[in-house]
Image 1 (cartoon, rainbow, N blue to C red):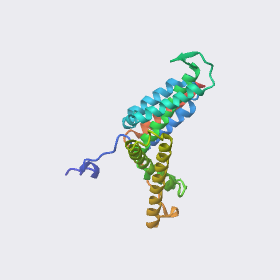
Image 2 (tube, rainbow, N blue to C red):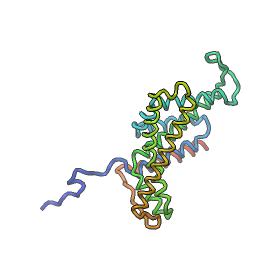
Image 3 (cartoon, helix red, strand yellow):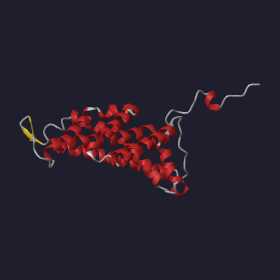
Image 4 (tube, helix red, strand yellow):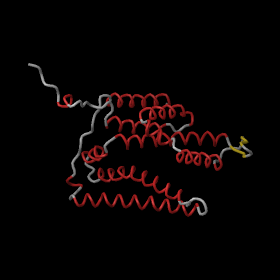
Length: 244
């Protein structure tokens, strides 16, 4: 008489390679790297962190490669170049610039990319109810629900902003009165976000939601989660040892 297979195996299901625990650990690891790597000499560490995040979250990396993000990054770098306090020692296209400002701007851009990749990867790879339940189990009643509402708004804000931008562009709102068009764009995105959050709160009230009666959910643990946690902790300890 043969033993029956587990229910998950019978349905062709198995634990994922990376579960929610691993994604949370990766997010915390990336934030710690950015926080600890304050000196420009740590640029290699930040680049390695950026490469690791790009490998784990290629979808988030592709989103950051879109033209609107590239324009935003170029503006950020340009502001640092033009308004930094470094000594002028470069001449680029007839503009006197500072190499120190250039290095500072690139390093700041790398750290911003790490944060954006980590946040986008976490938001698209984990069920926010698990994170909310984690806060509830820690005794922070209501914080989990607030966090869930905030993270739930991220895809909605992204989609609404894209639609608003395309509508504004097709109607010529950025040609004659571009400043007025940007104001209307920001107002539209903010209004849609507030309306969406109000709908979520009203839906919770209709279902008689109360922070006092909320319950915690356990995190999904993948096959490689503990390996990711240990590797992240060891890399942080190694960085602190080398930096010290």
